[in-house]
Image 1 (cartoon, one colour):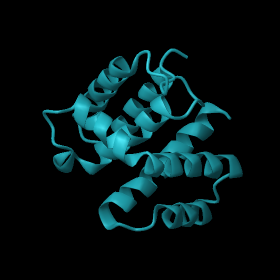
Image 2 (tube, one colour):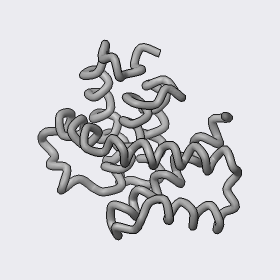
Image 3 (tube, helix red, strand yellow):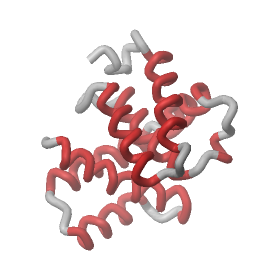
Length: 145
């Protein structure tokens, strides 16, 4: 899949997870709404669905990785957009072999620039860098790829 399509899938997944996190709407329903409203290409929809399903299936260990890497920032007090960007990237880094970990970090930083605050880029980069370092050599990580 082309990188532009992956980026669009990440954006839609982020929007869906953000709405799930803030309004507690069903993430799959939110994604379906986006797909209809924006006439998403099937490959974009499929990858966004894979991301959302994966994040939600691994939410507890993903959040534990965030907490471990950003222990000075309680997860309940993190900006929700930053938290969901981190969730997407950590899912891609630890559980999805579709992209190398460094590419997932780079894409997350780009999402933080687009959707986060002025400090989001540095925060996301720092947390993901720590997660990357903490998972070097982990059998569930694709950090070496």
